[in-house]
Length: 171
Image (cartoon, rainbow, N blue to C red):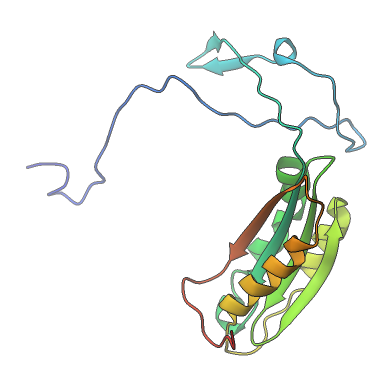
């Protein structure tokens, strides 16, 4: 019998020539460390040191994190609330910014644009489950309006944390 016939997952093997490994370095006080180069790191694959090529991107981003906050996502909200430090360190860096928008039948800006991870974490922590509706499309419209007012040189990103369908938008 085949692996698929036994309800085991299919296995695909391939060779990969390039692996992206984003890195953020902070000191003991949580401050970003700059000025590091590829020679300051060692990357291992199967216990063998690999060559490192560093591509540094300095194009700052402006990001809206729009989080569905109706009663159907109440059980996963605690996990979502933990992403604040990840947004600061791994996504926006020292020059970017993010805002937090919660939506059920209402659109609520929980945190205006900032690059302070503590404020982003606090904004996420303020999100509580609300009504049974989910105005996803309206949240996309509002996020777009918020991003349109950000600096022109910034890349604009919308991180939408939601179910796959709208449930109550007016737009």
